Length: 227
Length: 299
Image (tube, rainbow over all chains, first blue to last red; front, side, top):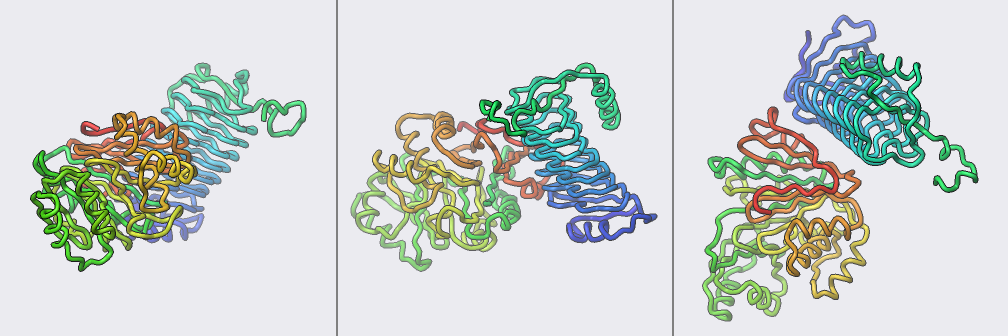
């Protein structure tokens, strides 16, 4: 196991080490100590590493990740795993605003709560939140799944495209063009897979599914009322 | 941008370390606001019969003695002064309104940046580290302190446009964000008799709060009506005589994080400012919800 101490190397020291490892590296397991809420820790990784961050991180941790499994043993700031392409980012605590923003792929797990705009403009990422999400989550979500084991704040899925939203608890309100949808067998299977991947015990049948009414993003004069 | 930070000590044994504990918090926010910085520290409460003023002058060598002597003679009161940087802490037995009136008539160049029984406000253009040193805050003792690092967007980089802004006796406001209806609101408040020193948007928010408090609102009511009347982005941190209050606009895109241990409560724009405090790793940490008013002490 290799160790990186943020207070000694700084964020650049951590990232330049992790970003330059080749895909076939034998040095796969890394521990980051004393993150101290600094931003951009472990961003832009492209090798299949396991990175354990011991403490709270600042903004954009795990952003643009490819192939790595990044675990944050603490809380995370704004934009955790933003624009992730593949791999896993796992937050053991809570995450602040815009978690998983614009994510293309991979899995983001937040054991605690996420804040507002979780999954904003998601493009294929899967996000599983053990707690609740704040307002405007999955805003303009295009693809991927957002699973919320707690409650969702106001305007869930506003102006949503084809992202799928599963919420177990209460939804404060749905955003424009977001509606509750039927849970079919394929959705139950999908949700089961996601919950399992995130180590959750919830039953898929306890969730409701939400998605696009598809009235807003294909302009039709007949739907003018929805705008 | 801008950074805001606040520290409230629950454990009175830490009082003597307030300035030392707060310094890295403010300095960590330098890259959110390198234009100017300011703090409001709550310390050395005066007697009930006295008022404490924080005064500022552009000239660091300004002769504050003439204010001391002039006030004593004109208002038949006792005064003590302490010069700190280009600021001066004036404690007087005179009535607050009479002092403000006298200063305006005789020394217009002296700015009143705060008043009350415990509050002291210091603010200046320049890097937060320089500002902190200038006002000798390293060794400052006190119960609580709030600070601001400014990256100017809505108005010029000047000392007068720096935060905190006073909003009444022992009250002050720091702001991260920008208000879009400050021009209109300034005009409305001017008609109500409020006066303005700058074109700054936060000064309008401060005047709005001052006006609400003067016309009978509690701090909580003033903040609640602020949520309706102030249009724009804001996270506000309000310092009060014995605590502080935090409120975010309904969209809440200006960051804020809070943390609490048995020894202290801290608020910051980003957690990295709080990370310097002893016990921060194990503190209870959460994000204030939009449109919700959080208070410590009897705010």
